[in-house]
Structure formats: C-alpha cells, structure tokens
Amino acid sequence: MDLATRRRRRSLFLLFLLPGLSISSWVTRTPDIRDALGASTGQMGLILFGLSVGSMLGILSSGALVARYGTRPVVGLGTVLVVVSLVTIGMGTLSGAAPVVTLGLALFGAGMGSGEVALNVEGAEIERITGRAVLPALHGFFSLGTAIGATLGIVCTATRLPVQWHLLAVASVAAVILIGAFGGIPAGVGRREAAGPGTADGGAGAASPVWRDTRLLLIGGVVLAMALAEGAANDWLPLLMVDGHGLDASLGSVMYAGFAAAMATGRFSGTVLVNRFGRATVMRASAVSGAAGLALVIFAGNPVLAGCAVLLWGLGASLGFPLALSAAGESGPNPAARVSLASIIGYTAFLVGPPGLGFLGEHYGLRGAMVVVLVCVIGAIFLAPAVGSRPGPRESERAGGDGDAAVPQAVPETAAQDIPEAGEAAGGRRPAP
Image (cartoon, rainbow, N blue to C red; front, side):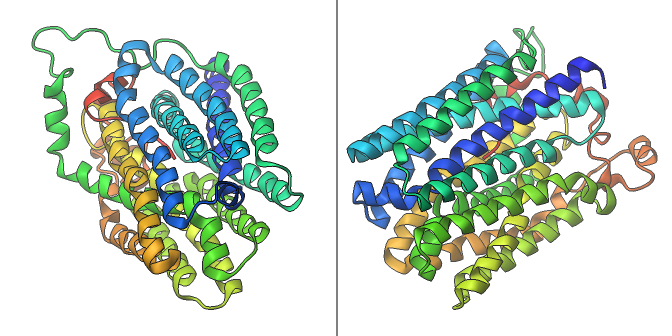
C-alpha cells in the first residue's frame, strides 16, 4: 500500500470515528434532554423523528451530490453539519425548546446520512485498490468513536455536567478531527461525467436493473433488519434500561457504552472472522447473537442479566451493515449504485424506527416495542445466505476454494472499475449509521 493510500485510509478511520463520537455523546444524554424538555416517551419519538427525516434527506440527496461533486466535498459538508448539529441540540436543551432540539437532530441526520454515503463509497474504492476488506474496520472506528463518546457521556451524566457544555466540547473536538483528516481525502472520487448516448448507466434507466435484482433486495432485507437492531439501541437503549429495567440514568449510559464497546469489538474482528468462516456464516451467527441479546433484554426480569444481554445485542448488530454493503457491492455490475441502494433500504429503519418504537413504547412500554426489532433480526437469520459471495472460477482459485471469504476479489473486474462512479447512486443511494 503506497503512502497516499495509507494516508487516505487513516483519514477515513478518523472520519468514521467522528460521527460515532458525536451520536453517542447526545444519545447518552437523552434522559437529561428528555427531562429538560419535559417530554413523554411518545414526544421523544417525535423529536427523534427529526433525526430520521434528516437522515433520509441526506441519503437521498447524497447520490446526486457525489455524482456532481465527488465524495470529498460531500464528506466535508456532512461533517460540518454534524458539528453544527451538536451545538444546536445543546442550545435547544438549554432553552427547553423541543423544536430546536428536533432541528439539531435533523441537521445531524442530514450530515451523517450524506457523509456516510460518501465515506462508504470511499471505503469501497479502498477495497478495490488494496484487494483487502476495509469496510468492517472502518465501521469499527465508528463503533470505537461511539464507545469513547458513551464513556464521556457517562462521566458527564454522573458529574451532572450541563448538556450544552458537554455537546459544545464534543463539537470542538469533532471540528479539530475534520480539519486534520479532510486533507487525506482525494478529489474527484465518485464524480460522474455526463453519460454519452447508448451508455448503460446514468439516468433513471440505470436504477431499473438494480431494483429488479432479487439477491440485492434480499441483501437489503438483511441491512434493514440489522440497521434497525443497531438504530434501536442508538435511539432508545439508555431509556430502555432506565424505564424498562429500573436503572438510573448513569447506569443506563453504562449499558449503552457496553453496547458500543461490543459493536467495536465485533467490527474490528470482522475481517478475521469472514476470512476464516465466510461472510454468510458470520452474518448468520451475528443475527443469532443479536436475536438472543434482544430476547433477554425484552423478557428477562433480572436487570443484571438484561445488562449482560446488551453485549450479545451489540456483538450481533456489529457486522450486519458492513458485511451487507460488501455483499451488495459484489452482487453485480455497477457496485457503487448497488451499495447505495442497499444502504437506502437499510436507512429506512432510521426513518420508521424512532417514531415507530416511540409510539409502541407509549402503549406497550419500550420492552414490548423491541419485540418488533427482535422479529426483524430473526428474519435476518434466514436471509443470511444472500450475503455470501458468488465468485467465478478465477476468484475461487485466488480464495483457496473458499469463495465466501473472498470479499474484495469476488467483485467482477468490470464492475470494480465502476466503483468510483458513485453518482449512479442518485436513483438508489449509498452508509452507515
């Protein structure tokens, strides 16, 4: 790997860490934010709806933005929005203004949604250049950032540091990270030149074959289920442990930190596990772990057992998103558009998840609401074979016969050349949250 590629990969590690640090910083303070706003569980669901709407707007616009300007400016703009959102959420909490907090969450969602799309296209390009699986480690840095942010959130909650000062400090750190890492992202990646007559890609016509790919839709189902499992914890885990199991706010934040640490552990070990056991097997095991953890959190009456089960939940949810994105990229021609389409299906979970779970939680309690997430993750167990590699004979030989482990090599050579053309995702989309 040459020096420029190493620098680029390091920059991606930092830029993936930044949204994880940011999201966990305000998630761990959701009990304090709720109390400052005087909001009920249902009202918190509506406030979190701002995050969902912002995420979908960012994701839906990201394909066109990357196609026109490339990944670099989209990453920069998205990260700036994340920084601004933290300040906005803090100010809304200070003033007790729920609409301001909702606006801050919408800015966060728009920045993270658009930035994550571009970052994942960058990660797919690094995989193509190096011939190595990179996305699990990149998402591992997101989870590492989440764990760091959650730990800081625990300290801030325990010491009763006002939310606005906590989030302002995190915003300052995020700005420094952006300034230091942004220079490593090259210009022009993903930018698409105008398609000439008779070109198969571009325009609305390119999306039709992608939508008709049955395997890609099954992969999208896996992304949907596993993104919902991850997103449900990001949005509701502290409140779930506080309201559902009687823990105080500090212990609720500890549970979230444990979830984030388990996510980071699973993602950093993902490449080794996939190389040894194959992607479909690892995905199935992840879904089983996630389902077991969720079931114990929902049905266990002992809060200690439920707290331990959070680790199973985190390990199970950790690899679903990055492995499914890798599978989508190699599922056929035009990998960037396929990654984008699978991601937009997954991000539907972020649109319907927070308000939907909040509505159910208002009527049945948050533990009862999580049954919906459990059912989806159980479904992912049966969809897991869709994420297995489909290498041709040459790829199987390079993989030593274990085609399912050959993630980067399984991408057809002609399709791999299209990876930078992420703009074709305009009709499909991208992460990854």
